[in-house]
Image (cartoon, rainbow, N blue to C red; front, side, top):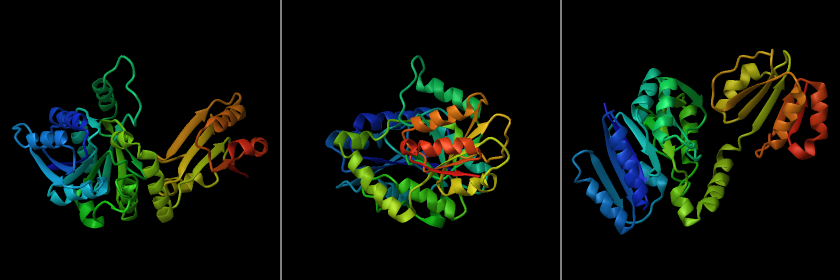
Length: 336
């Protein structure tokens, strides 16, 4: 039993070195590293070649004479792999202790699990007075062995079972250098009956978008690929349910299906009101105090940068207030 860790690389010698060293330092599960070099500069190339002479790590390097992009490089690594698990890992990451063992332990818990993500800082900075290792250790001790389903895993650290690759194939290559290929692969996995999950006890630090930020190409690339993705799969909606009584608008029946279809669901629940909802990364539940409940809801709605597409409220008085504020929050308001 082994995991092949596929790392597409384009320059960023220092970050790549830190990433590889973190793997060597923090990985106990049997592994091999497959680096796909997308025509990196001489400094990075020399470093990658030197890895093959190290005795403390099993490394294979595939060299491309032009930059083929992240998706094609990832697929080159997948084709070169014969392991039971493949983990596609960005080179601007730092893996923490127990990261891979924990992800694979979660993958083994359910035959239906096909793709696993770890938890991450998601681009946020390290809290003052703490190291990444301290944060990862606390998360592991609190969440070891647990997971939550999601509709889409993020490609910075993307563990795939071999049977999923054999069933649905390789990463899509139509997005150019990168972005949204991970979401499309997750959708394909879900449509073929596999679960996509986040291992709550595994932690990987991600210094997001480092390579594209360096070129100033990120915004243009992201917008282009976003349009391609929306043309194929449609845009996710953000739906808010404000519940004070027994009316649920069918949320209790349909929440999981909507979440699996990439619909973001927020629920503002008045204390004392109960509803059974599945644990899912696309479902966010907030229990708010009864005092000033309506005002609290309105303030939370108005301060959001990413606006809701539709708001369901079982309170006629709150619905009327939200209708009056529609020019500010932009959402369609639906009431009982």
